[in-house]
Amino acid sequence: MPFADVKLNDGYSMPAIAFGTGSVNKGRDIHEYVEDALEHGFSHIDTAQHYANEESVGVAIRESGLPRSDIFVTTKWLGERSDIRKSLEMSLSKLGLEYVDLFLIHVTRSVGNDVEYVWRQFEEVREAGLTRSIGVSNHNIEDLEPLLKIAHYKPVVNQIQFHPYNWEKNKKLLEYHTKHGIVTEGYSSLVPITQRPGGPVDPVLARVAKRLKATPTQVIFSWVKAKGVVIVTTTSKVERLKEYLAVGDLPDLKPEEVAAIDEAGMAESSIVVRAMNERWCVFLLCFITCIWVLGGLVSGKCNGYPNSGVKLSLTPTACVCLRVGLVVVSCHCRPAYLEIRKVPLDLWHTTSTYLFLD
Image (cartoon, rainbow, N blue to C red; front, side, top):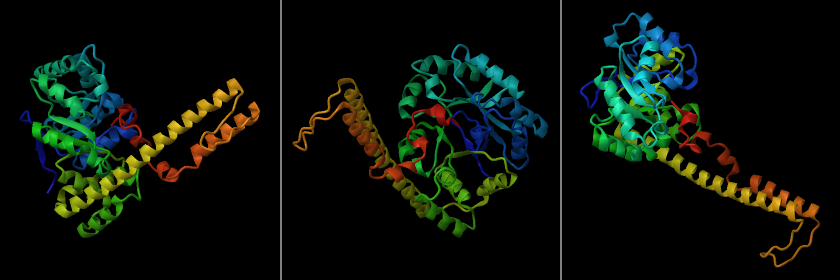
């Protein structure tokens, strides 16, 4: 059976899988990709002002020939705080639409301390009929709490990065969403395949894929579906579109299979935490040692190693050479160095949303 629609807390419904126009598609003319997606069964198109391709999305919608009521369109506010209504009207002009189905705050940094001011404007464009539903993206519990306290209309969704390797981090957030009737949308769900192959999730995916006669990609999306999360994905290949949509026809994962993917993802998370701790400890050591080197250059002194009980009297040149050598050793001869290098940069910068905006 195809993907069922998801009921939103404002009474509207949303397709449970969306074709995303972000990631590598930012700033590109992607009307052909969007047309392919619509032609092969996608009815939910996810775009954003930040993606700089709303015009080509609009072209695809018009050329598809589909009734407007058959297409669910999401766009996201970039952060022009002076007039959110005007910002949305510009998006509508680019899209060639009278309204969007869902309008999101793309990132929390756009809101700053003006939660009530921004959300009131979102509520106003909803009441004006420029969007049917309003929601957020890349918000955590600390961001949602003050918003919910002042909201007349609660956000219907929170779109977040969601995959097995950040499942443990997101567990409490999903529970919070459920408690408050907020639907979770997940992007970058294929990270275990596209960015981190060879991780502990891979054997589990292969085992489940064999049972279902499916692909590892389809197993990940089945796992996302089992979590009650709406899938946001993208591709330029028609065969991938068919592969993604076929997930709706697969049997549900067994509870033990979902649990096995959870556990494998959490195992990777533990490795990452250890690697992050190691990375920052080494960074601090290198920083302190570099300061020591500069101190030697300025003072020309290099006396004493308390732990050795030996005092050294070296020339400034020898002192600097010794200290530079220590920097090199501390930066390159450390445990887990090779393992740390395997960890993708997005894990070191999870708070820098704009680096990985989707």
